[in-house]
Picture 1 (cartoon, one colour):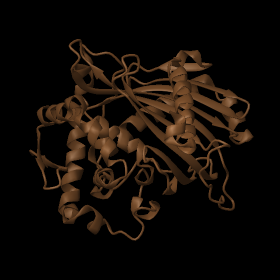
Picture 2: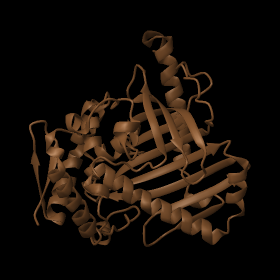
Picture 3: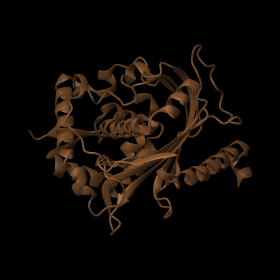
Picture 4: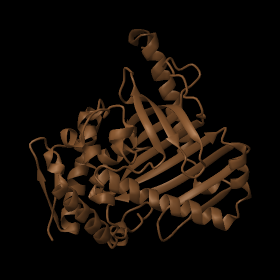
Length: 363
């Protein structure tokens, strides 16, 4: 089979399969298998964490409410729009204006209306977590509190505050993409220039997995992709991560509108000073810091996946558009989510000519 596919494609599939099996093995571990661990009953997040020399490993589990699976996966795949200003940080949006990319509907009036929608949505979702989690498995998604969007334009902002620049490098398979990502750690002050491969495997129909598997890792030594020269003054961190996006279902097999996300992350060659600081951190400080950070991540990524017009448009125009379309059609998940949002948030949806969803809030 590999010969009929060609040597290059055969090697790519063999590499992908090996990483897939490795990812499943890691995701079968529990947060409690790592040296430090905690499960927070209030937020529903669970994590395990350990430091070995200059290597950090983390195993996390969180849940999201009322977000289409396609949007949640897209929020993690479209790397260049995850930052605070994608029109300055994305190579694909370089030279584009917000108005030309998003359309005239995102004028100031739309931004203010979207801001109201986000605030109302967070407020009303705050009471849904416990009621929606009854009768379904998996962790409870954290409740949300009303927070006004910055400058009324949450549809433009992402959740990665450290992102400076991201560029998708040419590859033959969009679902096995390579990204150059520059970031500047707001806390550490370190600058990074990494090249990452992000692969997607649809294992929804596998009864033992039932999830979309996303693998994110630094390029292997034998990866044929040309690596750009690293920018001066920037460091390189070896990253190896995998995520499982699993739609949760009830006893009858129907989608509940909730998605559990399991993740295993390993960072190699982190600065030794940072590794020592983490190692010496009191357990109660580590517990509070990681639990708070994960809860905030769920809120920020959730808002981005629900409301970002930039993400929505980018998914429509992405080389992975067919993947998102396929996920949207699978098992009626998106329809279930939209119906739940419309009922619980008192909102109605109207599709424009391109089929995208616009908020129309009943206030």
